Amino acid sequence: MRILLTVDPEIPVPPTAYGGIERIVDWLARGLYQRGHEVGLLAHPASSCEIKSRFGWCVNTSRAWPEGWKAAYQLHQVVRGFRPDVVHSFSRLFYLFGLLGRGEKIVMSYQREPTGRTVAGAARIFGNRIQFTGCSEYISKRGAAFGGHWTAIPNGVEPCKYPFREKVQNDAPLVFLSRVESMKGTDWAIKIARLSGRRLIIAGNHAESGVQAVYWREKILPHVGRDGVEYIGPVNDSQKSELLGSAAAMIVPIQWNEPFGIVFAEALACGTPVISCPRGALPEIIESGLHGFLINSVEEGVDAVARLDEISREACRLRYEEKFSSDVIVSQYEELYLHL
Image 1 (tube, rainbow, N blue to C red):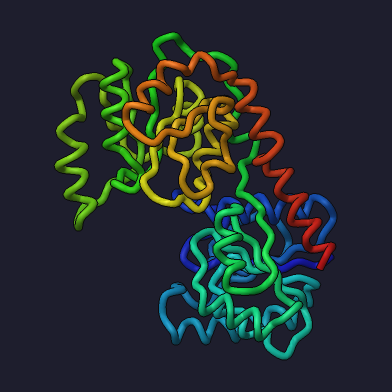
Image 2 (image 1 turned 180 degrees about the vertical axis):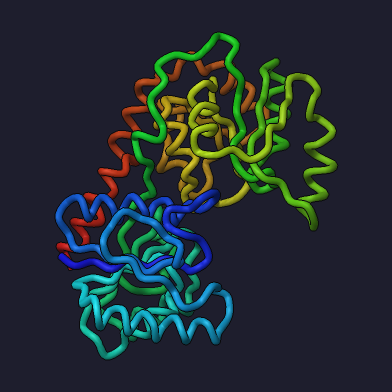
């Protein structure tokens, strides 16, 4: 097959720092290419994904209407030249209107809550040409309420990036790895760690202004450097792997409906149990009591920490291998393309 993948123009594929979607598209493109497909990528001009056909966007933002029209026209031109069987978009749905009047099949993937009006409009206009995917059953069900054909295909992680760690030290810390925001439950993580008498390492960005900056200054910063709470800032891939692999558990007690959360799959790949809350896609990622615990209060979190010895690190890794390995996800997208 000939497959064209598209990503918003802001970040190269693969990303040099943060860029979850761009990292997914990188291994998806390489995986499809290694299986013998002709793969094209329309992304940031500095992208270095290891495939033969790369195209750089003529715009540098996905957040302005004039640039949106230019991008839609460019997509039309690239498709006319590359002649794909399937166009798989991880970028703005609006760009797909450059394909009106053509016959290629379209896959539109959502990594966040779909917008009802745009989904309904695209479903009407493109009909059976378009297939929607969500990064979880939670997202797919939300999207399907607005129309169109939906399939849930989760995000994944490359095995080489997150090797399995069979054992950790008896005094291994808890790790919070995410943006330091109220919706991620950093304050819950601190309370649970302190009440459990466990060290907590916090890794991730925090806001410099606005409501979340106040949250950082008032709810988090006063606890840093006290009672075993340590903040180490943002981490790169290798640091992330080491941090997760050496943790007794990753604790990110989300306070919102998480669409997926790649970091949870990264923790499982390392064999590290997850402590979070049963919101959004989390019940799809871990089974409470088998791969960690889903909690509804700080008190339940303390109980979960006390029960970590019940969780098999081998079971966590197996969950990753069966559900969230990059090779498994490539196969799911390949099957969807063939179906189309």
